[in-house]
Image 1: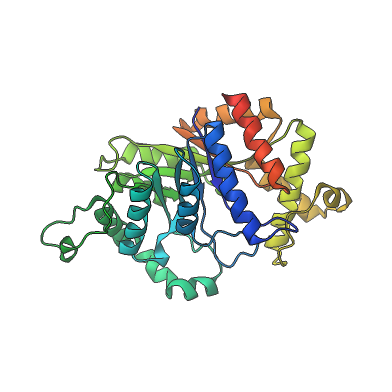
Image 2: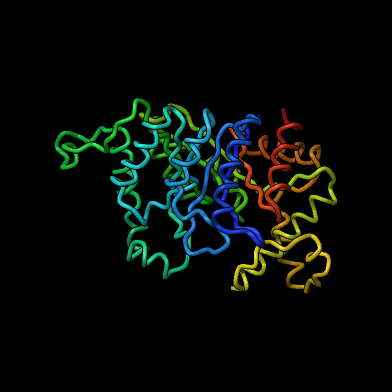
Length: 331
């Protein structure tokens, strides 16, 4: 089973954004040491609890401190940017770190409406134009505009020996169809979706068209996982994360993820208990053997080429331990 890491660079209670970003680099190093296939870092805007607003910057830092693990954005939110600049940035990364760069593309705003306006103006109009933006991006990455196109006279320098591998990230039929039509790999966000993910992934496979990038469909399924030495410890770590999400949903100022001690003192309301059940159903939580069993089941259900794991706990140590336990059990 191929496993990879998705990181949102969480800022934990009592920690700073600088701490979070340094821990992200350490997580990528750990993933490389343990044998994870790739490490991706997400893009968010105006979230005090998430430190990575510019994954392309972090990838330069992480690439310089790792040697072989594939690294990428999960994802660059294309409606905010011009395709040419994205291609230049990732071509430069691919020049620095040859045959290691993935370019995940998403269309979510990644933040509030105000943040979206500050970034790119009319976000909804940019989303509507995303099919054209995606086509332009692929042409720039592959350096293959038709000779009669105005952009055929320019290239997104530097041109790497091996181009970044484009992935479309999504949680819907629409994103699956786009990935299939463009001939890109597809990463499905199981941890974010309430829809029938298996049907969505099958739609991608059935509609896939060969491209310069890849000849066969490639699928990553991303799932939220918390693994600890015992099931009880894993459940306590998960509850800390659930309470943090509940606070965020209520619009409360980020307080970091509660400690286990704080969780034990917290009295849940009935509404909060229902919300936790919803979140719990999307996650894999347990001891190493339980987690492996569920990962195998998930991979089998999706026929996924790879499983990407996102883990957020109330300490960076327990997060790293979760990835370590999973790697030891699976491999």
